[in-house]
Length: 443
Image (cartoon, rainbow, N blue to C red; front, side, top):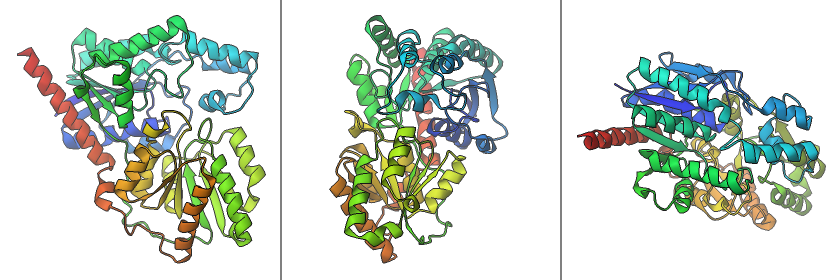
């Protein structure tokens, strides 16, 4: 069995989609000939969300090494007056909030002093720990998962020092992405140069959705495009034995974070229109949101929807979040409103597919729409098209009334290709190809 060193910031007890991706690779790689060793940060790192239950999914044989990280967020909270429990990503990306002097100063420092990101304080400690791991273990290949992009720099330095083959994984684009800081002058050039060095020096690149590769190679056309491989996110549960039960209320569930450019305003206008057309609808409808919600969006929802029609469930362990999906009639997906939105594929879309409940995606006609069309698992409507959203919801509602809202008509074989096991098998194939290519070059 070959050994892969996986380097990731987001790993249990970190919750959220970033941690899920690397956790599932660790879970299934041994089935395909690779023994995973994990390098991550200490358990008290400043994660946006925590999920202690995920520890139970880590195979007992997995070696996990943790190293110190110098994080600036305690200082950020002091400057901005943020509470110790407030998630920084929501605080910095909340749409329409007015920022004070401290907030603006902290954002400028983040954009122009912490390059490529605020986790840069892990770089020296991660490299030192990584070299120690490689000395103690027979590591065949290095695998890094970003963001944060500091992880890519750790992998690049280990690759350059040890000569070990390196596969760089990207869950999101790097520079210029919708969540990236607005850098200026030298900071922007340095960030772009670091991105270029990573994609140039990595032996292979894996991406969670195809638009990431297009973004990277569009900015760095000198890089060989053939080194990129698509390893999608996925789901990791078997829906066969889950009971399909019609809810007393037509329940539409959104799972995940809802803030910044993930704006449900079009949905709210559609629901208001439906309640005007059929006053009885508000007594039979429930919008459930499971996850972290920005204060501005939560306020808008509570002000515009009847209290009985809205349920906001704060962040819960992943297993509980999936259970909520199974107890739903329709699953709601909202893609960020941004120029690159057509290429964005949120990780939750694959869990929605695995649940086999109809999906309503508020997104442009892009990659999400193609996935839903290919699997026949749902419909895609522009998030600003209130009338179109209402038509889609009326269709789902009528089918719910007739008790025909199930997986009939879905392409289940196409859906099964997005299981975490299948995607991990594909990743192991990338490792095999990388090792074969590097051995061929050495001879």
